[in-house]
Amino acid sequence: MKRLLLPPITIAATAVAAFAVADIAHEALGHGGGCVAAGGKIVSVSTTFEECTIRSRIVDGAGPAGGILVAMLVWLWARFLPPRSPATHMFLCFVFAFAAFWNFGYLIKSGLTNQGDWAFVIADWQPPFFWRAAITVTGVVLYALSVRALAALLKRDLDASQGEMPIMICLTAYIAAIVTACLAASLDPRGPSTILSDALPSSLGALGLPLAGWALQRRIPDARLAIAPSRAWIAGGAIAGAAFVSILGPGLPFQ
Image (tube, rainbow, N blue to C red; front, top):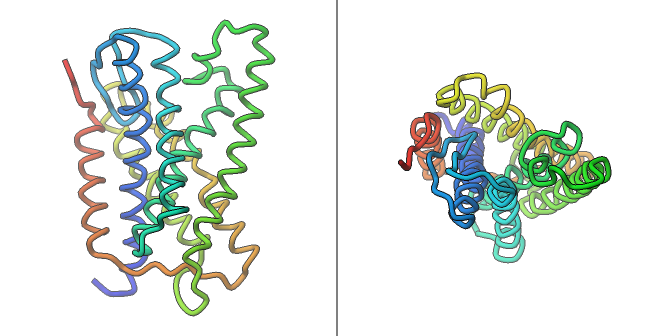
């Protein structure tokens, strides 16, 4: 493997692993944990859906809440106890990005379309227009703040002498996550239509990732992010991606 190929492969590998963590935080930790907390039993979990024996606002809201919790914990880790390894720090940045943008973006989607987890949470709340507008505005504000927070985290790894352009790193990670999400959804037990209905919206919703890279590049035109090639992260990302697609893609039954 040529050394020139190692940095972008490292970026893609860390992004795949990070997207898997963000997805599991939403579906398994969030919805699954909410299901158990509400007194239900988990039937199955896939990359796009968690099936519970009961239906409640707790279960619906726990998915995005779990994702947001993981995003905030990872942000605190990356901000105050940053790892020495640039690749590991990049992994934390990507976990924050995918978890925050997916779940804050969900606020916007639910408010505008009246569909999805947040829409189920506020169903029947009166007046409906007020609550839909409220979650939409909240989503836009939190999404924008997350873009700024991510750009600040990425700035830690700036190295004017060597490295990759921030926008290229973020685009590579963004594309890797989209491909991974679609591959997993193609095996979804509800059918490949979930690629369009669930996988693409959740992965494309992380548009804030390349936006943060673009913002950093615009602010510092000659900015470069130091990303040392890591065979360990390449292997870890490959294993995480393979497990995510082959195990969670078809759904993991619990009953």
